[in-house]
Length: 105
Image (tube, rainbow, N blue to C red; front, top):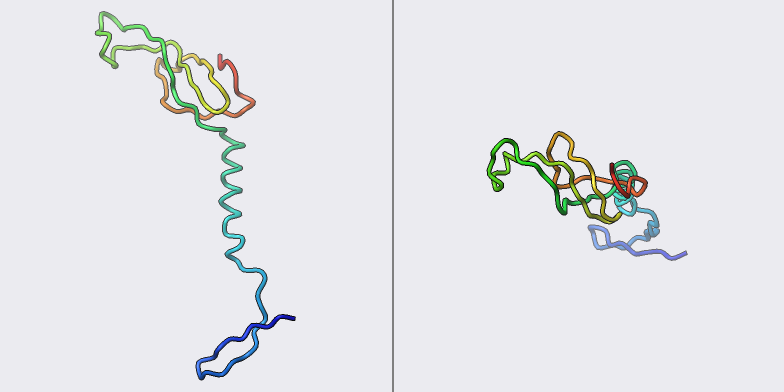
């Protein structure tokens, strides 16, 4: 068996067996499991691409507070899709799973 030599404080050498398993070898495992769980539970991020809106009253077209959005278009790793705007607003980023891909209506 291979033995390593370790120098002690007084200068003497002693044999030390190599350690094959360190806790640091497994430190990355919880991070990978958390990423996998997050992907399974929430999916991947999709960003807003475009939207359609109506003006509330006689509002200015450039006044974002006077807009009531009707539909939101998103693109991301699972492709593009269109959803109805919940509450008249569009989120900038939403999370979708592959099973949710397609038209979101």
